[in-house]
Length: 196
Image 1: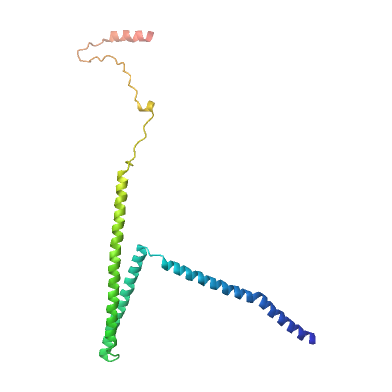
Image 2 (image 1 turned 120 degrees about the horizontal axis):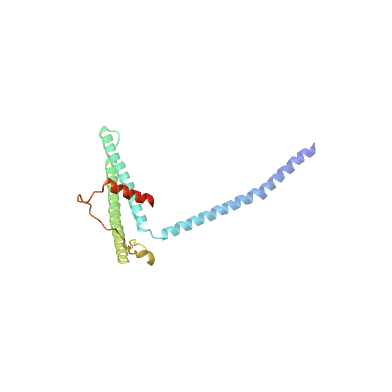
């Protein structure tokens, strides 16, 4: 009976050793992998910040800024109206209404500034695009004509042969003044033809 109690302790020690050998190094490797991943992400973010934005990216960002601050303006303006109504009823203090109104005015100014900057940038991009298109169309028009032209036929097929002259019989005018053949003469003609 004493052997079963000792066996349980040995199994517990073996489980602890297996835990230390198998699972603890895995946790350490996982934490090292997480640290490396976070380091790579930080360096990638720093590299992305150092790269200048393209005009299209800047235009998209300005448009998002304008839309976001327009939504904030709408909410704060409606909030200032709501707090004004609530202040007249006596539910809130009059202090919140001008604060929300000033905040709404600031959001509106930021939205208008972003709209103005995005409009100027869009005009600049459009003029650059049109300048490039016009220079490309000029270079295409200066090149040789690209219209379709038929392939020339080989020499024997391109020359049409002259038509041979046709030997035509004499044309005799049939008129009512022509002599009529009698039945006796007609029988003689037919008899000669049968004899041939």
